[in-house]
Image (tube, rainbow, N blue to C red; front, top):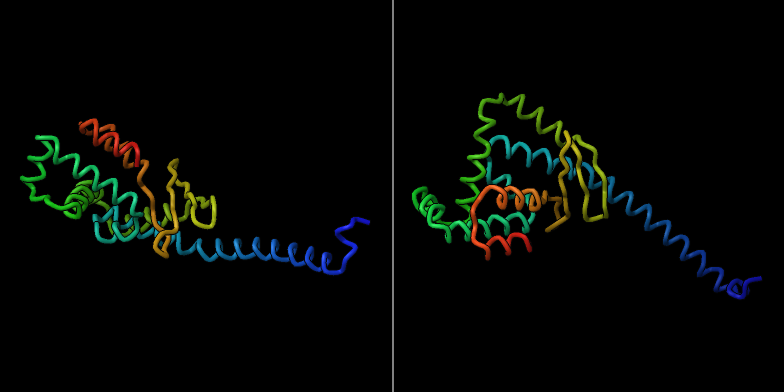
Length: 185
């Protein structure tokens, strides 16, 4: 007989360990099952915000890292004379105003959608394939795209940082220092 199992307290300890591991797996499944509707709601509302240009709602559903990206881009735009002039001409003197204006400009492409079409698109996105990477992170796949969702500040939020980095770095002329900060983010 294995020496570990000769003593009754060792046997009891073994059962406690096995039971606690099983309980951890059940809690993780319960946590994820409870998180799924919250994630889908966050994705739905974020998509609605994107399609309608509701920047305040959008900001409430994105992670701090994405907000930091916008801050870096805003600061970087102030360093480039042409972009600085655009910021000044449009009275975009804060990061919040910059996010709002950027967001509303992007939403302009959806202005002709009916309320039903907007809701259908948001529902379709939120109903994508959800995969948990951990109890704090998931990805949602829909229509060939992937969205990263993380648990931050006691809520599930959308992390659009990597897609945003690519978009800003590929489409705007920024200083080397700003590009480096964005790439490092």
